[in-house]
Length: 459
Image (cartoon, rainbow, N blue to C red; front, side, top):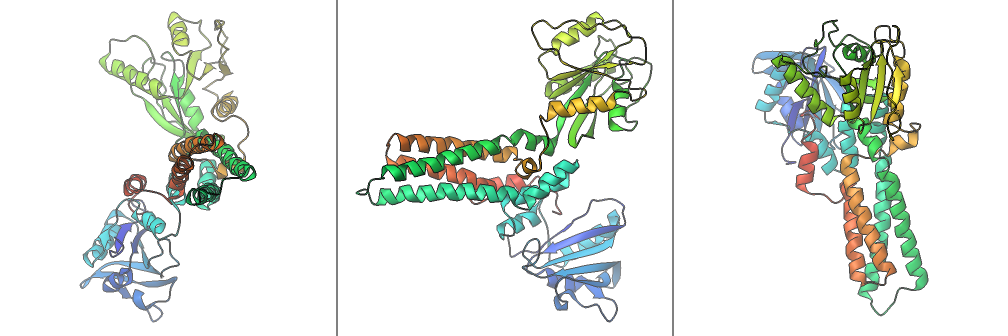
């Protein structure tokens, strides 16, 4: 793979001021030489230019000028991929970027696969696997907290702790294997106690990391919150207030929302995906029936419900049914239209704790800030601390750590019970390998393909 020079557009497609085409590989400068024409006395061919310099010129195909560009020359190993790299900044727009890319491909480059630049950075030792994943998290971050967490992981804060954990497991494994090689030397009680203490410390540390899994997944993908209620309860108005803009059509006509609308909002630093659903009611309209069916699907997938009730009207039988139906879900009862005289009386829940209640006026925005505070407290318990953001693990990390914890616990139990040391060593090796998966010290090609296939092509 490293014998090939890859190229791709590294900026989003569409009209813009600039577009960047990136090349990486041992022949990056040779390919760029074939299609770059320097302009001016201070510019030179990429192969002759000093590293980390910008050259001004034109991209040409034969006698045809494609575009006027700035070309960055970056020589290995001081590059993202640790390979010779060229970055061509051309005018933005679909056609200029596509023609520049086509030109470098015709001169010997290969179109990069999704995430291949970052994959090469990992395989060349520039970053570990956890840092590589942080690149994708950084690109996809939707709030400042998610951005901070991705930057902390990219800086290696999580990797440092995971590497120390793996080193401790490997050190214990080496100690156990030494006794396997020299069976005449029994493990002394003091040595055994020291090994067990190290294993128990490792398990405690894994538990600390595993407790960050929920927060890590919230920062990366957000929480899905479905807005439900009877028609004309004010669901769409509430969505618009939470987003801070008019996204959904608001009308006094019941059943205006016929389909689900999904939008992500930054609520106190947390990404929350709000789903405005069609009003729940019996209907004979085929389109509205389909909208209600989709609403039911969204409700099944939602982790939180905002149940909107019209506080200016008495509770209806339908309201009571929906209150009972969704009682097992994590929910907030949003009493809307509080600018009008209140006629709503909520039933006292039988046995279950009373759900969170927020009074709002989605017309004026009154109570929306208090609702946001309630949303944040239900999604993320306690304060959002900086040290928590440093090690907020992903679902992949969670799976690897869970397997490592099980193996380490079994190793500790076997050692404590004076089991055969070969069994202790086997469990320790399983645990160390599982931890190594997080940073890529033990991995498979299938795992790498799965991780990097989710990246965009230019990254």
